[in-house]
Image (cartoon, rainbow, N blue to C red; front, side, top):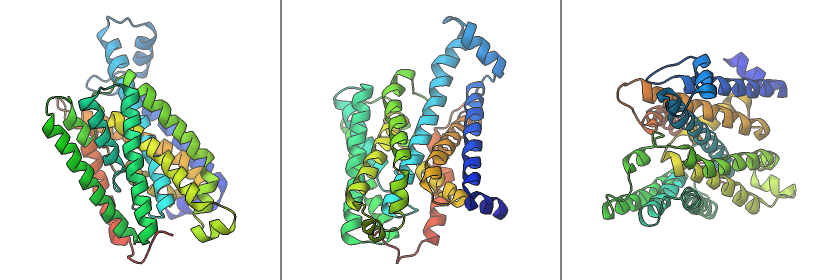
Length: 341
């Protein structure tokens, strides 16, 4: 493992190798997700049904209505949240920060519930409202962190407070209108069982655009990683750039939450793992995080819907079981003296 890490972090060739392996792994994982389920099929059968099947064929309906949208939803949610977590960790200079830890997911979820319960479930309106909620939470955390220069652990505790506030708001909405939002339980824990192709079009476009924007911002993120003072001395407008990166992160997290619910810990696990392997060069960290985030959520969703047949476990529960011990590990490693600069 140490030899692999040394090779990957020692040259751009190692980083490109990991990116290539991740891209290939993503393609294989996507097709595995298409073929596996309660009724597994072969890749040959998948393409045969997809090309020559009819709308009356039950297997064709399963593939086109259930499996393809669900796998694509897992891919988009995983990639979007992983890149969002990468941006947030860089802006806040905190490896424990992620969309669900500092309240961004909760903010997006609260506004999605408000719109879904009292207005309508139009995909664009859901995505836009999720972005507004995510952005409010993200900039609130940035404002508090920069004003108080609090430690990394204190910033995480502030995120828990924000999570509690928005969580109370979501519970209040559901209590006041208990029958208005169908599938609220699945939304609150994070799940992909209700995703359709129509609900993915608009948030999917937001996620792809946000990932591209993050890729083009990689050099600025590298400069920010040198420290705020050094970045300023090199001509960077630190506050404007931090706000821009948080804006992109809010778009990514909000779009993912609008259809996947409050899935957590992807933005914590994936960026941290990628940086351990290839270092902190965001030219490679961002695409690798997008690929590995998609792979991770597709696999978790696949296991969640097949391990307990005929029952299905929401993927958010499995993500929490995996991510919580990792988060505790990061807390134990953290130092109280570290602060946002």
